[in-house]
Length: 143
Image 1 (cartoon, rainbow, N blue to C red):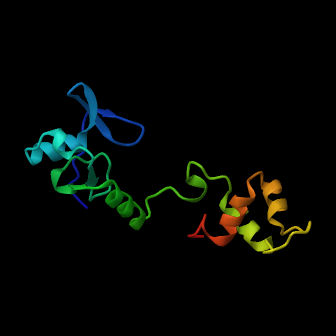
Image 2: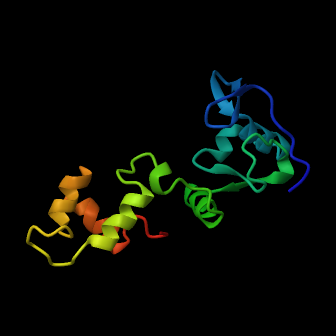
Image 3: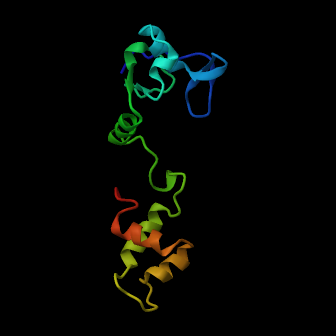
């Protein structure tokens, strides 16, 4: 998308510009959305201002739309912009480790063979539930 207008103010580490207004920092894109539509900021409380252009710095009102947090999450997933795999903040395993675990895991194996879930959990320093979820595709489903 073209014609992005990058905001001014303080650029936070999350990639958004913020401006001081009403005694607090507010996302510059939220301010731009409200000013363009002649709305007070409180009118969009509980809603998110989404960037159609996917540029967090953009304050072009034509690139902004109001949505729910769930719509914002769905948009992020649909555009594959969400943290996943080892880039996710709580990931305990790497992509390579998950592939290795899936290759050696033997379902129902209670012995001390290399594919045992408990043995794999000890080897990788995670809970057996983490191994089970990685194997079943609950975690790392996209892999």
